[in-house]
Length: 253
Image 1: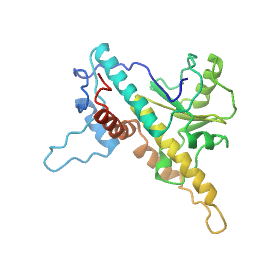
Image 2: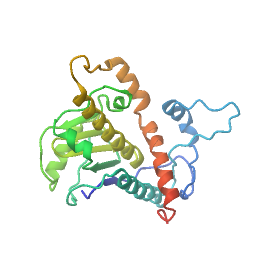
Image 3: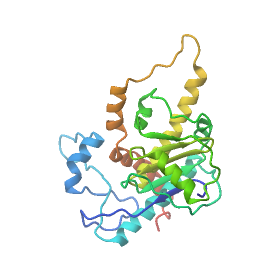
Image 4: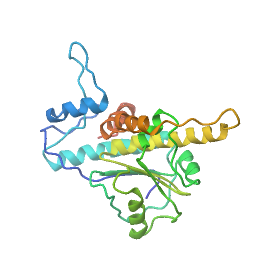
């Protein structure tokens, strides 16, 4: 993969007839997604009903779908560059598929805190709210396979993800995050790198009288459902997307 690689496969859309997304435009809400979307993103509405709830746009033709994917893919690369995720390895065309058919996008880079934490070959601990996004949703690839140049290595990484995890820490290497959309995968990568940073700081601070306290499984599972679901992760990336589009108006042309 190239430095700060963000990949997305086409998604099948069939719900609404929307035009190609314009730079800075706010997507409308597919009517049949409103209920579940509101629950996932904790949208309570406003008393006058004037606040419009955004959600991923859907399209009835492949051309508009591809345009939307390319726009968000381009924006994700810019966001990664601004986050300092600009270290990687030689390009690889080795394909790999995850056991979860709903995962259409993947992000990979050698971020500073991600690669530092990867040397432990273990997942992050449930020490704080943001970490709950990865409760039972973060795998570890417990070996260093070098630069991924073969389909076999890609398949082994995909197998490590398993059918339930969206993200994986590659021992002595870095991280990969996946999602239904490039937005979800990109935000998961950003927040996982920050969680690795927080974990390293917490580990370094441990001493007598300052032992780590862990979030119980029941609360962690609830927090993951509420704070780490795909819709919430998509929405969390939108401020990053809007900022880069606003500051680089030629990005989507």
